[in-house]
Length: 173
Image (cartoon, rainbow, N blue to C red; front, side, top):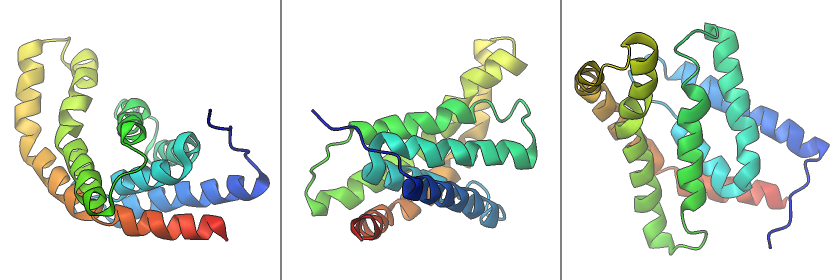
C-alpha cells in the first residue's frame, strides 16, 4: 500500500510555484493558437507528485478564472485537465526509458486532439440544447484547431521525460 505523502510548508510553496508556472506558460504562449505547455506540465507534475499534482493543476485553473473571469468557458476546465491527470495516473509507473518519450508525447498529443471533443458535451448542454447534430458539427468544425493542439502537444510532450527527471532531482535535494 502506498503511503500518503505529507503536505508540508515547503510543498505548499512548491505547488504554488508550479501552478503559477503553468499559468504563466499559458499566458506567454497565447500568441500561438492552441499551443500550450499546460498539458506537458500536467503530465510531468502527475508523474512526480501523483495525486498531489492536482494542487498546482487546480491552482492554475483558478488563476485562469481570476484573470479571464469565471465565465461559461471556464467550467469545462474543471474536468478537462482532470482527464489528462487521470490518464497519466493510469500509465505504468515503470516503463523502459526508450518507451517513455513516445508514450508520454503520444498521450499528450492525443489529449490535444481530443480536447475539442471532450469540451463538446458541455458546449452542447449549455449552448446547443443537446442537439447531437449540432454538437457533431461543432466537433468537426473544431478539428483544425484540435489538430494544431495535438501537434503542439506532441512536440512539447517530448519534454516530459527531461522535465520529470529534473523535477525529481530537485525533489531529492
